[in-house]
Every structure is written in C-alpha cells, then in structure tokens.
Image (tube, helix red, strand yellow):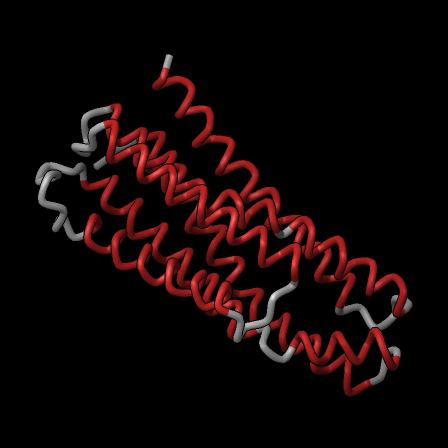
Amino acid sequence: MDLALFTLLHLLVFVYWLGGDLGVFYSSTILTNAKQSSAARIAAAQVLAQVDMAPRTAMILTLPTGLTLAALKGWLVLGPVSLALIWMAGLIWLTLAWVLHVRHLGPTSSARRADLFIRWTVIAALAVLALDLWPNAPGLPLFLKIKCAILAATILCGLLIRRALVRFGPAFGRLVQEGASAEVDTEIARALDESRPLVVTIWLLLLAAAFLGLAKPL
C-alpha cells in the first residue's frame, strides 16, 4: 500500500510539473504578443504567476517522494527517522516557496536568499547521490543516479531562468504603469525569449527521467 501511494504521488508530481510548465509557456506567448492589449497581457502575466506555482510545488515534492520510493524499493538505505526529516525539510522548503509567492518578496529578502541556499544545497546533495558518494547506498542503480543528475539539472535550469528574467520585472512594471511601448515590448520579449530554451530543456529532462523511471533500462 505504501509503495502504491508514493508511486502515485511521484507520478502526480511529474504530471503537474510538466502540465503546469506547458500552461506557463502558453501564457508567456500572450504576454509577449504586442498585438494584445495591455490589459490582456497583464491578465496573462497574472495567470502565468499563479499557474507557475504548480511546477514549483511539484519540483520540491519530487525529492521527498522520489527518495521515499527509493527507500521502499531498497535502492537507498533510509530509515523512518531519516525519511521523516526529509519530508519535514521538503515541506519547510515548500512553505517558503509559497510565502515568497504570496508576499512577493524581492531578491534581497532573507527568505529569497534562504530559498536560493536550499536550491544549491539540494543540487549538491543530488550530485553526491548521482556520483554514488552516499555512504549507505553503494549499489544505487545507474538509472537512479541519472535521475538524480537530471533533477539537479532541472533545478539549475530554474536558477538560470531566474537570471534570464531579471529584466522582466522592471519591464513588466512599466507595462502596468505606462502601457505598451516598443521599448517595453522589446525588454519583455528578450527576457522571455532567453528563458524559453531553458524551459524546453526542463521538459526534455523530465521526459527522460520519466522514461528511466518506467523502463529502468540501466
């Protein structure tokens, strides 16, 4: 029963991550369409911001659900206490992500810096698992190591997307306050155009991870 439950949760994480990302991608095409009215573009941005919390939530829950599955299948030696701590840490991170979303905290806030620290820490931990440096998991299957590397890569892509979108906030603020203009449209389009290849990369990584999880070819 536990195995079936966590397998379902892990699958739902994949569905909402990929599906939410597709919704965000489509909303961004409306946002960059200069033929749309300013009101329509602002509405698309609001939809984008809300829908984007689905993949953000899913990404965070990927780790505790995946590690729990690995433990239940005997691929990773983690006791009940360790799993409980992993879930607690994951839920704290998820709460932090939602606080950042609801309160619209800026990049210099302590909460934003804490989120950034957590992401780099998770990337490092996943690299340890991918390189088989975890002391209690000498026999981790190769496909699972690759999945750990893939998750680390998706988190890194997310950080690069943030960097690409640095100019988006000020440009969108001008769209709201001043209305559309050629300069504002160019800045918004440039920011989103830089981030889209990274989004597509995340999609491909997710599909690869899903295939490895289902086929277990290695």
